[in-house]
Image (cartoon, rainbow, N blue to C red; front, side, top):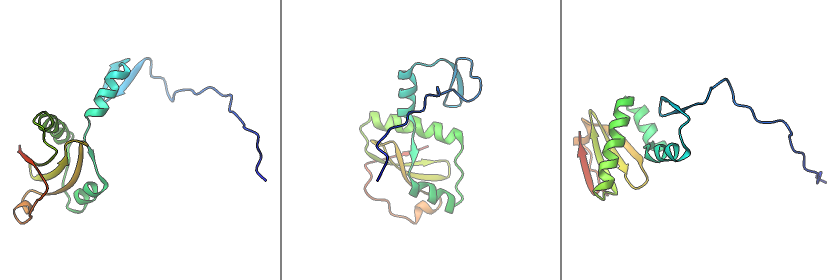
Length: 127
């Protein structure tokens, strides 16, 4: 029979290390950013699906911080235009992106893009 008693840890939660009032947000140090700023920034980030991560790794396609920032800006512009699923050609990488979910669905080599047929997209951005 299970013990019905509940045990609560009375130890206070302490932060790891000494932060001195600074929060890390998107690689930059900010003076105590507000929660709404952090939430807005988190909602702006583009995530990669597991399938997209596997394709990038299998095909040896590099993704730099600069590419991610350009991709986020492009997804913002596509969302303003009302796009839902888009093909984004970024440098030598072709990405199919769900604009509404801000998620990269799949990735392929830009050179191989000529051999593939890409369906179920409503827009394209070539950078």
